[in-house]
Amino acid sequence: MSFQPEKTVDHVKDTYFKMSITTPIGIDLGTTYSCVAAWFDQHNRVKILSNEQGNNITPSCVASNDNEFLVGEGAKNQITTNHSNTVFDVKRMMGTRFSDTRLQNDLQSWPFKVIEGPRNMPIIVLEHMGVNKEFSAEKISSMILKNLKEAAEAYLGTTVKDAVITVPAYFSGGTFDVSLLTISREGTISVKAVGGDTHLGGEDFDKAMVDHCVQEFRKRHMKDISKNARAMGRLKVAFLVGGSTRIPKIQQMLEEFFDGKPLYKSINADEAVAYGAAVLAANLGGNGSKAIKHLILLDVTSLSLGVESKGRYMGVLIPRNTPIPTMKEQYRVTMHDNQVSMDVCVYQGECNETKDNIFLDKFTLHGVPPAPAGKEEMKVRFSIDANGILDVSAELVSTGNKRSMVIAGSGNVSKDDIEKMLKKVELP
Image (tube, rainbow, N blue to C red; front, side, top):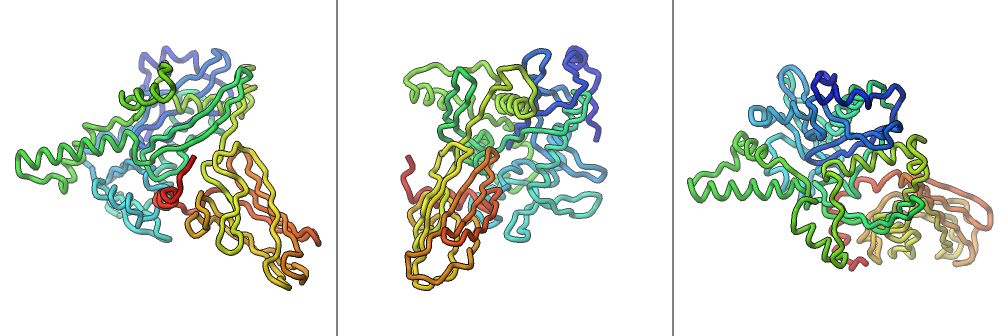
């Protein structure tokens, strides 16, 4: 698999964009298509980096045949003849359990094989050189990212060592993500709230149209083609579009919500996310113009974070949509006489009782001096950095005894878990 760009007219025109220094890139890892971009200091702008076929977006597909693995355009182009060994929609599987209801529904429309792996993880099975090989969703995604990185290196003519990769608030779907933010004149971008639906992306509209065609064919010809992987693969190619932001109804609803203000449509919807990632990459790498270097991105937490209180209740330290980085502290007291240890159980969610929220991790602080209930205090601190990494620490006030742990994500949390939890509460 070669990633050297062909000597097309477009690439000849763009040679003045080539750079001789290491350049951080921005990558939009999409469910249907992916895109890569970089900031160019000499032209004070972002450039979307085309792939070896000269296209600005690359299909998020991986395929296997008797000789090699294909990624992107090559994988998509042979889907009708090699449907059972061509993987797409892989982002839907990331962060899910094999038993999740939505994943099981998705499996009905996928021509490739997915089995249950360790810890209830979905595992993709592809035939390669006559042997079945197993891949996690993350491994398939890494192949797509590697393709984008190598295409960027070929385009830039330099090694890429740093990248900003965009992901949705939650994996497990073709996503329709919404972020509400403000941008100050000084260049501070403050995210006020985030939300979305992992099954309301462009890929879901594709699936709805494919299902409609299957039903119409059944009515007119009395034949069910839903079990014909080749036919379903051909329909899939016909509707491989994505991009919910182009839907007129979505645009209309947005304009109505913001009192008739016109939408800003000058940026290509397929490229907008990679564009923003490239700007952030330049900012973090110390590149770009003065305006880029002074940009400040203030993100928020997608769900509340807290510890279990009184054995069943959620004691929130960091509420949902709190700007990060942030640090919060809370004091806990012993519940029993002569208690010698105190547990710190960390949860994520919006429900009053922890059983309805998402358990993340726990530790126990030992060495509590025996005393009457409520006498000994423990200070719990939650600290989230700009990358969303949560550091949890607990310190016994009387002795200074301390323990801590780091939580890099929300654990093996599926979208089903999140949606079941959110349905129980009315979110602001």
